[in-house]
Length: 103
Image 1: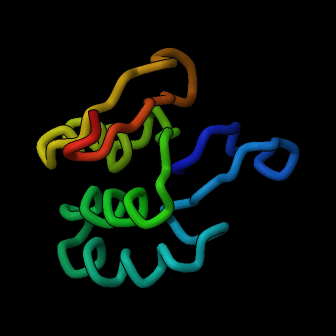
Image 2: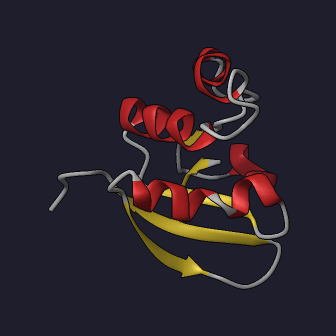
């Protein structure tokens, strides 16, 4: 999930939430069809990065136990994104996102 609030109560927050699976952000479905599905998930980070750029997402909230999402921080870093871990314990990990070229 991209955004800055709890995925369990996204509608109860003042923060905008962008969901990279497509449940709350239909635009993500096309990106996953373009990047994630043809590569059997290997290029999921490309879909996440494209959506984050389009929606100006500033945070990544990922499940800490889910192998596809546990790899996202490393994959995004390889794509020149900077991630600051804000919460590294519990069920979810929260990262502050900095897009490539951002100061």
